[in-house]
Image 1 (cartoon, rainbow, N blue to C red):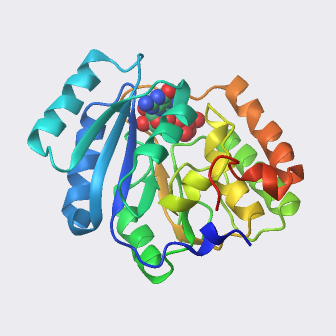
Image 2: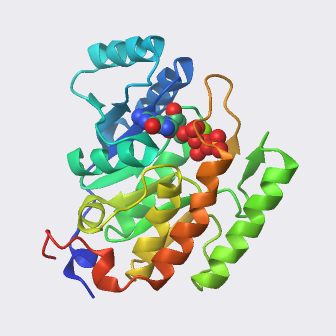
Length: 253
Ligand SMILES: Nc1nc2c(ncn2[C@@H]2O[C@H](COP(=O)(O)OP(=O)(O)OP(=O)(O)O)[C@@H](O)[C@H]2O)c(=O)[nH]1
Ligand SMILES: [Mg+2]
């Protein structure tokens, strides 16, 4: 087993990654709620913006940074898309752990204290939020999408022989060292799936906590049907990758 899987003895603070394209009030509300519930456990909130980030959103980011300069950091990504935003954030994070979430309130900030609580008890493990556990759920996702999501979750659990229930949701906590040891491939939303599949293949312990997904009230989703087709590719490629290919060659572990 690679040593990196057991190299985080204690939770010392989380970098919360907040990618932003069109969010305004939802971003501010996310930051406000995170500070309200988890201030003591947050090392930093790392906001990632891109060339497509709207000027109104950028203005809010700068305002948040001005209000809490020691807590909010702004990064302009060079790699494209959501996967690119996350991958750069993983490299920059200063916390012992990293929380990957969204800024559109579709990842409920109230779940973050639960992610952190489990990380304090199991610092080497990953903790992932699930909409498919008994007290989790969806509001406003649409019946067809919920149905398709269920089929994909079942497929994943058969192919990866896992009891975990939500492989596609981009709301998880990781030891930072683990993130920096893995060789990542995806640049779009399929990256969210990759962040569960590769640790699973490496034998990382993964815990789940329940959460409820609620549709955004503002801004636009950046996901599309063509992007979603990439989920199948990553599902198959990762299943058959050798463990050596899952880890970065330039970082001995
Ligand atoms: N910095 C950055 N943020 C992004 C990019 N794409 C998406 N985001 C943000 O990442 C978060 C999740 O993206 P969404 O497009 O809402 O994706 P989603 O909610 O997983 O997908 P759907 O449920 O299909 O709408 C949102 O806060 C987006 O603004 C990107 O290319 N760069
Ligand atoms: Mg969203």
